[in-house]
Structures are given as C-alpha cells and as structure tokens.
Amino acid sequence: MIRLEQLCKRYQLGDEPVMALDHVDLGIDAGEYLSVMGPSGSGKSTLLNMLGLLDTPDSGRYWLGDTEVSALGEEARAAQRNRQIGFVFQAYHLIDRLSARENIELPLVLTGTAPEQRRPRVNDLLQRLGLERHADHLPNQLSGGQRQRVAIARAVIRKPALLLADEPTGNLDSHSGQDVIELLEELNDEGITLVMVTHDPNMGQRARRRLWMQDGQLLKDERDAQP
Amino acid sequence: MRSPDLLRFNLRLLTGQWFRSLMTLLATAVGVAAVLLLTGMGEGARRFVLEEFNLLGNDVLIILPGRKETTGGIPPLTGEGTRDLTLGDAEALLRLPGVRTVAPLIVGLAQVEANGRNRELVVVGTSRELFNMRQLQAAQGQVLPDLPLDRAEAVCVIGHAVRGMLYDQQPVLGRWLRTGDRRCRVIGVLEDRGVSLGTDLSESVIIPVASAQQLFNTQGLFRLFVQVQHLELIEPLKPAILDLIQQRHQGERDITLITQDSLLGVFDDVLQLLTLAVGAIAAISLIVAGILIMNITLISVSQRTAEIGLLKALGASERQVHRLFLSEALMMTLIGAALGILIGYGLLWGGHWLWPQFPVSVPLWALLGAVLLAVGVALIFAWLPARKAARLPPVLALKGITHA
Image 1 (cartoon, each protein chain N blue to C red):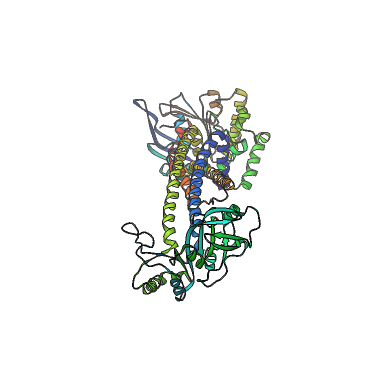
Image 2: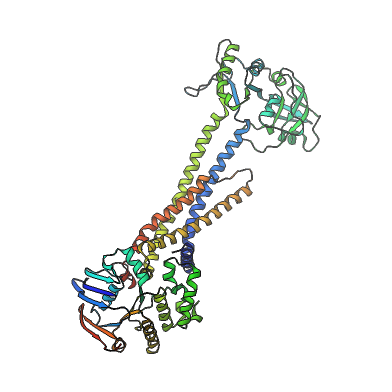
C-alpha cells in the first residue's frame, strides 16, 4: 500500500545540515501494524510526517495506494490527507473552544458533509469509544485518556486507510495509555494500517513489525513470523 | 466547508474572545456610524437649504429690472438708468403663448398701525397668483382676491407673526389696519410655515399690487414671476420674454432673467461637495478600523498556529485556511457595520427628534459606500495575515512555530 523509494529530507539545524531521512526505502502492506523506534533526532517523526503528507521530501518518491503522492500539489495532498490518513498526536491537538463532538466531526465539516449525515457517524464512534456522556464537553473538561480517545475518533471518522500515531501515549499515565493503545490495536484488527512512533520499548514491542531508526536511516526491520 | 458550518466556526471564535471581538467591532461600528452621521447631517443641510429656496417651483422664471451680468463689475443700483418693469409689462407677458401666470411683486417698508400699536413692517404688493406659485395658504380667512392688476382694493393678508404682534389672540378677520396713509381690511392670516430662508412672509403684510404702487408711489415693480405651462417651455420662452420686454422698453434689453434652478444649482453643488468631504473624512476612521482588523487577524494567526497545522493535517487546503481567516475578519466587519448603521441612524433620528425642522437623511451612496469600504478595507487588511496562515507548513505549525 505504501512504497517509499530513496526518500531524503535534510534540515538546517543551526549551522549544520541534519539528514533527517537518508535515502529511505520502505514498503508497508495494507493492514500492517508497525512501530517506529529510535533515539530522538533519529528521523522517526520526520518519517511519520512524510508518510502523513505533512512534509515534502527533498528527493525520492512516495506511493500511497496507486498514486505517487510525492508528485502532487498542496491542494491534492490536503485532499489525500483528509481522505486516506488519520493522525493521532502526543499533545492531542484538540480545538479548545469546540466540544468533543465538534472536534470529532471537524474532518467531515472541512469536506462539507451535511449535518444530518455527520451526526449518526459521530454518534456511532462516540458510543463505541465510550464517550457518549462527554459529547458536549469541552476538551478541558476531559481527562487525558478521554482527550486522546476524542482525537482518535477524529482521526478515524473519515475511515482512513492509514492511521499515524506520534507517541500517542506519551502524555498519559500507564493505565489510560494501555486503554489508548488497545483501542488503536482494535482499529488495526479491523483492517486499518497503523504506524506508531514511540520511544517506549514496551509499546513498540507490541507491534508485529518494528523499525529502528538512527541518523535518518533504517537500522533494523523486524517482523514477527505469526499472523 | 459549508457556509453554516463556516459561520458557526467563526462565531465560536468571536464569542470565545468576546472582548477582543467587541473592541474590533466597535472600531468598525464607530467608523460606519461616523460616515452615516456626517453625511446624514450634510445631506440634511443640503435638503434644508434646497427646500427653503425651492418654494417657487422650478417652472418659474424670475424677472429683475435692470441688466445684471454675472461676469464683470458691480451690478448697477436698482432701477437706476433703466426703465421700470410695469404692470403693463406683466399683462403683456401674460399674453405670451406658453405663459401660465404672471405674478408681480413690490416690496417696501411701511409703518403699520392697528389696534393702537405701531410697527415698521415689510409690505408686499402682489396678486393672487403669487399665493398659487408659492403654495401659500391662509390659516384663517382667505388670500388676496382675484382682481384686475390695476385695481387697488383696500384689503390685506397678514403674516402669522404680524398677527401676534398687532392683535395678540384677538380675532382679526374684518378688522382695519393702516399701512402708511392707507387703510385696509384684514381678510386673511397666512399659515405658519416656520422659519423661511427665502422671503419671510410671516412678518409682512400683503396687499394688492396696485395698492402697493400707490403706497410707495411708484410704477416700477421689484420682481415679476412668470410661471410657464410646461417645464420644457422655460428655455424657449426666455428669448421670447426678452424680445417682448425689449420691444416694450424702446429697444432696451434692460431686464435680467433668472431661473430658480440656476440659483439652487450653486447651493446644491457646494453643499454636495461639503457632504462628500465630511464623508471622506469620516471614512478615514474606517481605514483605521481596517488596520485594527489586520492586527487582530495577525494575532489570531499567531495564536492559532497549532490549530492551523491541525486543520491542515485534517485535510484543510491552503485555500480553505485562507478563506477561514478572511471570513473571520469579514464577519467581524459585517457585524460591526450593522452595529454602526444602528448607531448612526439612532443618533440621526435622535437629532431629528430634537430639531424636527432639520431634515436628516443619509444618502444611499454614503450608506453603501461606508459598508463597502468597511468590507473592502477588512478584506484587504486581513488578506496578508490570512495568506501567512495559509502558507504555514503543517509540520511546523503543529509544533506551534510561526516563523519557519
């Protein structure tokens, strides 16, 4: 489903250029569960942003499905992000002045879906994630775990093929972190491709496929034999 | 994004920071209100003056004795070296085809005595036609009767103020009044038309023109008003009138013809220019409001960097983000403009209520201009900050970094 070919990205950090991605080749099949680990500055977040079309490579190619998205313009990439990709961030990135429901339906609002079509879909998700009672709460009235659930609901409302999670449990205590990770895995079991960046080895070990990165290069690509 | 969603999204934003929004709204509102107020007053002044001078109607030609050029030199002193306008001229003019009526006018000061009181008042000699032309009506009794021009009937119509001066609240109809050495009977009191910038008839005594000729011992008329049958006849009649008078005055073209329009045109131009000027000055405050909107939008962009990144991650395109910020500024302006219109009209109506004789009316161009200017300024000034927001790379924006 995803194919990266010789992907490069260079950043200027002070005076020195840093190779955030150094000729990365990677293929990901639909439905895979993949964790990316490595020390900070190893390029794992850059890789995730690249996969999520938030960043553009300096060179190399990127196929998402059948399209070469590295050749698309900004407008087309925005449309791809909306349709194909869901993001879960460490800092949740919920909009404070909008209620849980309004945050979740934001991707649908952006594409101009009618309210009567949005409502049942949001209701289903709220129910599934056990957030019905919090639908009209503002983010600051929710606990960290609940906020991350809202963020996950927002990420999957458009039923994307790819779910990208950047340290999704980084701001959570271990109990709610466990809940969130289980939710993500459940979604993966239903067929969504899950790519998770983490520096917590325990979390990383749960994935069926594990990538280690260092200095912008793929150091190790580990797969479990089973499923 | 659907418009109701966009509206709701922006509304959340504005109410979320209500104090900041209110201040910006107020800036626009003050600007719009200022434009409306000043142009409303300017237009009011223009109408006031026009209404005051417009009593004759624009189908009336005014004939002055003596030739007065608009260019060159001081006009000659009245009557000197020229032939008088006479009642004979008036009757000749009436026979010209196209002329509906002719009203003569003699004005002078005379001692007026009645009820044991003595005042020096303006005495106006004219005919019934003048009442028709100026749409003057009697509040009591009747106006001058329809007499042959040369018949000096001993009747008079008095102005509203004269009545108060001479008779207080006593009944006046049928009572005698003395103008100079002549007695006449009061047959009517003019209705009170308020203060009039033209000739103030409320403080004058109106008598038949032949009586006035005897009173002031003159044949010459002060003015002749000629009302034409159709507005279009004004221009063709001018040379005909000049020719006729020339013929009657032994070949001398010693009269001046004025139309009311030529008098009013000057006032009109000056006052319109004045209204435009004060409106333009007020419009400056709208530009100041625009700069404020630019600042607010800039602050909004830098405060909401992370949100912009998120929206982009969720699939908002550059164009959508741009539109989002523009529409926020636009909404703020439109609400502000609406508020300004309310304030502006409120103050104008308040003023009108305090001074009812002063007409207030906001010209449509000022209303539309103010709103369009406010919207235009908001769009122009919000354009740059909105584009800045739209161009933010999503990765950096998510980290809250405004300057890449």
